[in-house]
Length: 403
Image 1 (tube, rainbow, N blue to C red):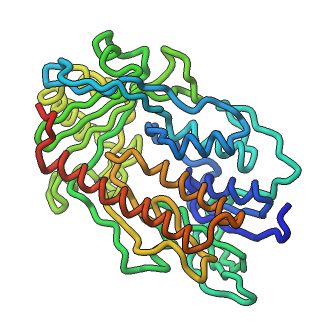
Image 2: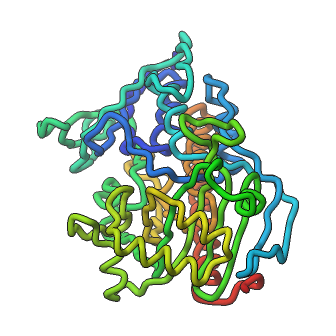
């Protein structure tokens, strides 16, 4: 155990918050994760993730389940509109899924049982970890004795205030904590969305299998990009034939257009701002998009779009905080709460993992606060800039492999 056990609250219970929570727990501290979602487990949208080096490093160091996390892709290739390969690169990347990572992290943090893995036993040196859902932070301020006072509301509607040693904000690109600390920082729509979905590997044709399984496939045309790769299947299965073919299809919609407003209005008439969730897409909107896919996409991509049963939409946005440390380093922002990357970077999960790995070094005294801020802000600023460049070229410029 550490010389002094710190009381820590992490705001946000998705991957980034769990990364940070596990770091503090393994260092022997008492950690509470506040997740605003009103249910004990976050809902799986079925999203694929490229597991970058920092995410792999985090699981290698901290995952006591020792569960394999990814499907390797050993070929990156590009198709023309007829579905013919026009370029290939022999590059190995690791492809995973949000739901597998989430359940592995929950098993490590607070011992949640699932069909994804066995829960590992705690170590004597571990601190404590509590995952408190339905908790919404309303305010934060400097408290007494060098602590931070956090005002919040729990799932029963009870309002409380508690003093803690550290507060970590990992509550996403629309971070409530960042809004409290830096209300002038706004999340801005970038002018296009990502249509997302998955299809069971055993439901795709031989032609689509050849194009997508164990490969990272792309198609570009003016204002359109679609990509696909294989990810773990139900309960994190890595067995061939039981995995999922995941895709991301970028399409342009001007912010004030009728088409964009229609797109983001769900089957109940509710207008969503950043994500149209699974199960809420209007049938006529999805039918139109499937017809559009048949018209403009290579046949292999059009096939997996047509076979998707649970599509969802993410609006592509930009946000970058000018700083990530407050109250003399007692309040820190990490992951998407600092910088919301465009998905072209495939770096959102890696950023959260990197920030958490740097937190470990900070708390161990292997770097000081200024070094932590510089390393994490440099990562955020450079990757955010690169994502904007990639997205603008893809959607509003001309990609060199556009066909």
